[in-house]
Image 1 (cartoon, one colour):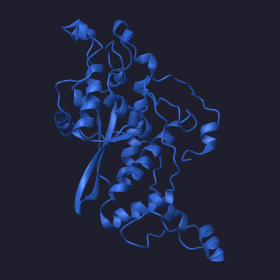
Image 2 (tube, rainbow, N blue to C red):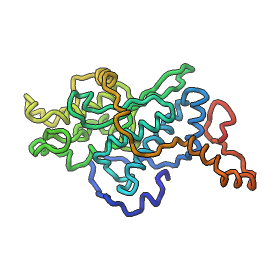
Image 3 (cartoon, rainbow, N blue to C red):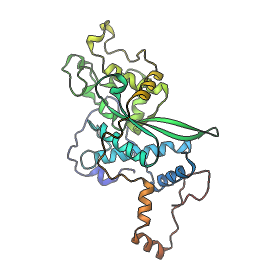
Image 4 (cartoon, rainbow, N blue to C red):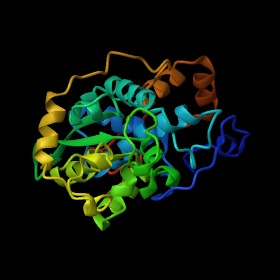
Length: 300
């Protein structure tokens, strides 16, 4: 499994368990860091990530953020990651920047025209589609599960006191995503993987849930629609335009971590005398990545 067993089973200082309105198992499949390093090396040489390996890269990036957020405090497989979106975005941004992948850090509040709500990253991944170099865009949100806590997603929230950063009495975004199949599907994808492709359809589903999160009961002229609407008149392309116009916040704060890419970690290990002595006596070959690159010899 991806998360070390000792991290999952140790005593956590803030191991608060929540019930979730929508939930999914956190991605915990095995990833060989040497494969990520080989992919990083391929990107440096070729200038793109093979399309089928984009999920592998992003699964590692969001894992890296979640692991460092929860380390010593929460079980990474059950954590809500409450109030940790800014640090998650900082970690994602710094790691992707070190990999030389274009990234922008912004806030949902920038898109909705309100105070800060939830920090996100957008990543541009160069890839080849039908033999042509293009970019696929992804929104990284490894802490989205905090908006799925059942207690915060009750209809009764409309009649209770406002709390947290949004000073309105409303259910959280999962309430509105839970009203329709496509919303549930996208929510589960984000919870599991921590990212989603920035297509117009996905952007509309995602940001519409925040649109209704910001709409208190006084804003409804027809009270019969309270808590029943989930699709605004805003198009996904309009949300996309707002992301483009939003201020890039990636240099405002730092994660506080000494971030190393997988390739940097392997290069550093190679330079250690212990590594060189071990491989001299065992005569062990360099690691051959089992990824199906379109060029041979991706050794590390």
